[in-house]
Length: 107
Length: 113
Image (cartoon, rainbow over all chains, first blue to last red; front, top):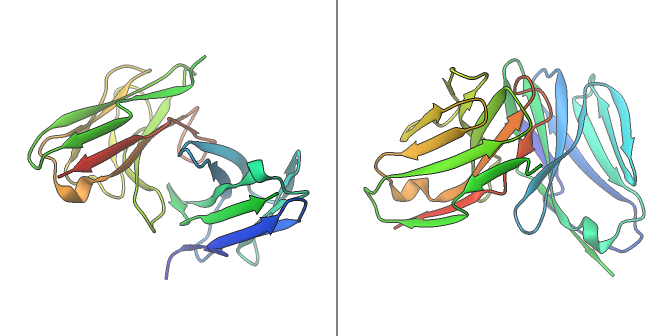
């Protein structure tokens, strides 16, 4: 079993829908990152959080340390949100990456 | 301000050949990293450099060497390429340490025949 698991693996949505991507981890962590990998391959860091919630534009990330779970929400999704979303958990001295959730948003 | 740059973007090697992947950052970051990304797997750390003059092994260091040439540059060398090293390689940097927000280069797609 992977230490960091994401669900779903693949997600399709219609433009305007509310999207939720989940990340669960089995190890103790002090921070969790969400990253976006564009179709062209580039990777951008979206959030780093250790508690509570963060918001940037239409993106919201939450984390529940006790339940070892984080979610990334996208409100009013748009085709340009189509990408792979990756969570990564910081444990002791290493970053453990999930395998990603591929999101496709259709007009 | 280019961020993190990598060269080359794409490379084809024959088994046994050597090559160096170059990475440079202009954000004055102390820490730099090399990752590989393979289908169906998360990013895996090959080597990292916490600060200029230091390098440490990551999760999958076998078959690779690194050089932190100066604060800006961190290169990854494959001495004798193997088909198992076919992958996409990403360089990244952060201000202080692996737990901080990392900034990624565009990636190098390597095919070893």
